[in-house]
Amino acid sequence: MSENNIKIIGIANDHAGYELKTKVVEYLSENNYEVRDYGAFSSESVDYPDYAHILADAILGGECDTGIAICCTGNGINMTANKYSEIRSALCWHPEISRLSRAHNNANVCALPAHFISDDTAYSILDAFLNTPFDNGRHERRVQKISKKPKVYSK
Image (cartoon, rainbow, N blue to C red; front, side, top):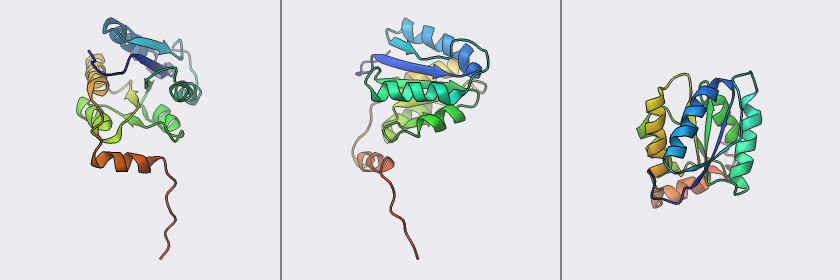
């Protein structure tokens, strides 16, 4: 699947993302990725922020090269991951969105909306995410601005 430097992928989910996560882990393993599963480990109700924090810490600590975050809409787990200044989590519901999140934004987490995409769409999204390099160039300047606190402007 991938010829880039991504070898270890962290994955986190809540209860709504558990079923898709199990399929994604199998798919990635079949494609020679090492997957580190940070939970949740069942479809019993849990709070998505707990698992997003674990995933973000694992990426920032160098335990994995990139991450996948899954919840019902993808929004909550995505918002939580993005609380970390060096995490750039992208909510991806289509392969082209996923490709552009890597190429233009150097996203390091792919958030998936489990209840709104098929398994095959999820696999296509992940293929795009894991196989698209960052374009650098004009995008580098923009990505550098993501983690900086903006100036306060007044009239």
